[in-house]
Image (cartoon, rainbow, N blue to C red; front, side, top):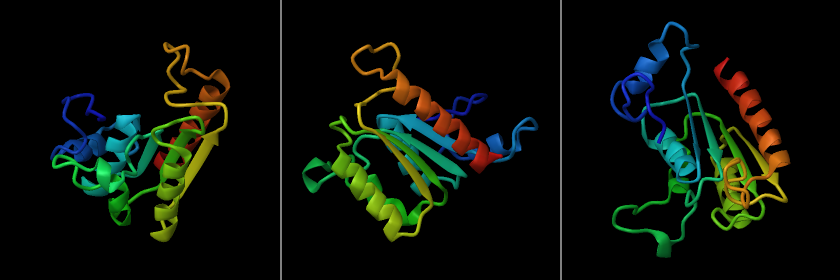
Length: 161
């Protein structure tokens, strides 16, 4: 989960988004970004928490979940809250990933289209899960990581100003 750098609170904690918006050296806008389960949490927090201005979901696993994957602690898949998403989403995904699989990304994209949401998805054919993780040689894909970071910075520049 993304944390408030000054207080350490989760961005969904009361007051943290407002605090970040009020910083004199900030634009007044807030984005959530996460990789893997952090991507899922960023998406979920944007849909259910205080309104934010952008979400970056890097290969967020279990944003789309079948009924057999839901539990008492996670009774709803984040994709089912897409109607409540208040902001644009950037999604970065590897086509060789098993969670989310390309079919899961297709399902998420269909939900975004169905609800008229603004989104930008990029898929990397020779990348799997965690392709930004330079400390994991079996996961890291330099070309996809460089292209992905360029997409992240451009998206944040457009959405946060």
